[in-house]
Image 1 (spheres, rainbow, N blue to C red):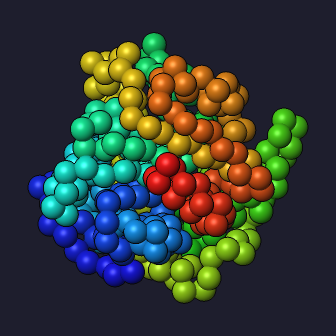
Image 2: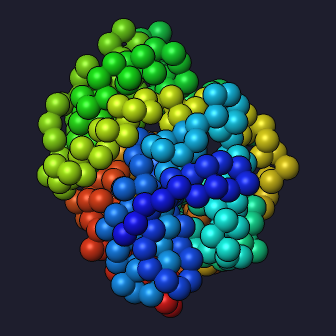
Length: 319
């Protein structure tokens, strides 16, 4: 696996890559870097693919525009098209987890001519809601949904204060190791409601996860100590803007072959209605071949269950 900077039409981008063969682009989520795909990059290379994982816009060593409005889903899809171009390819499979899944779905929706297969993890394909996300997300005088909190200056100040503690708390609380997420469980969830007076981190346990080696942990902490969390939070700041821009796409379907995977203990499954959205995906992605729930795994599926993920991806790509 090698790291290099690559100049594209949209950004100077840091990538990890390995292998030769059909191109597979892997999009990480929040708060991650390209190294989140280390297990998949090596496995895909051994299976005969050219695996490429970029630091996404605003993360790691990839450029981070100063204007938060330059972090719409259209900017992010354009980055992936530009990356494929810069690699000298015309088509690729696109794979994503968390925010990366949203980008992967949208890339397959907008450019099926360039992204001929899609694998999404954690975040299902969703239709266009009738009102803006900010009008749907719950908020009270005492608490608000994390996606609203992440749009506020207070969130950036809290997360940037001590990046190592921020990452340790978020990673553990969103992992399968934190516990089950069935109705009535009190497992901590960093992607739930946030108390206005206490912020996100105060009530999360401060424990390490078992599946990150010391060297991989150091890579992650170093990246966010350098970049901060602003780039990642800019994705959330554009949620309403994305909704406005996507009106023209209402009714479009993902027509390319698709695979969806989610950890049994993913934080998203604690959201009311999420299981129903997953079950309804066939109406939005008629070529969806399989939905796979991975026992015991949480939100960081490619890192928590790499053997299961690698097997599923390679079978899907070769099928």
